[in-house]
Every structure is written in structure tokens, then in C-alpha cells.
Amino acid sequence: MSRNYARLLAETGEVKRAIAALQKCAELVKATNSETSSDYADILFDIAVITLQLSGIPTAESYFIKAFKIYREVLSDDDLREKAELAAKYFKRAGITKLPNYLALE
Image 1 (tube, helix red, strand yellow):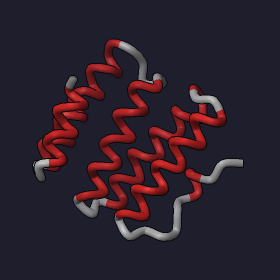
Image 2 (cartoon, one colour; image 1 turned 90 degrees about the vertical axis):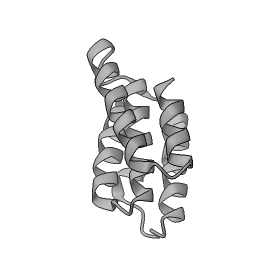
Image 3 (tube, rainbow, N blue to C red; image 1 turned 30 degrees about the vertical axis):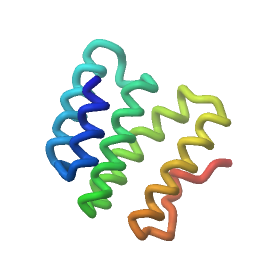
């Protein structure tokens, strides 16, 4: 539910509030589930995507790196490839043409 609220905030231009809502959601998931769950990684991914809207590329990358570290542990190769392709689309939308190494699938 909080993730939907955060997406709505981001879509209406309230990006900072969206990030704050997702960070609270991440804290709850981490406390009640695990910091190595796909749910937690998905929230980190969402924070990264929204942070890109603020041109916060270094901060966004730190969240993407954390998310992909977890994804590599918990997702199948096909699911991991799908997440990497989605992240690549967000980078391209932000005007970033050189993709980071952590998106490379071997």
C-alpha cells in the first residue's frame, strides 16, 4: 500500500515525499521480513528510480547497487535479466547512455 502511495506522490511531482514514504516502507519490510528479501530489494529499486527523477544519480546508483546485490541472491536468471532491462530503461530515460557494470548479466 505504501508503495502505491509513493508512486502516486512521484507521479504528481512530490518526489521527495515519495522517497520518504518508500524509506519508511523499507524500514518496515527490513524489520518484519528481511533485508535480503525481494520485497526489500523492490523498494530499494523504486527509491532508485524515483531518485533518478531528481537527478540524484549517485544516490540512485547506491540504491540500485543494493537492490541488485539482493536480486542476484534471490531471483532466477530470467527475473534478474528482467530487472536489469527495466533499470536500463530508467537510466536511458534519465539521459544516461553508459549503463553501470552491476546491470551486466554474465
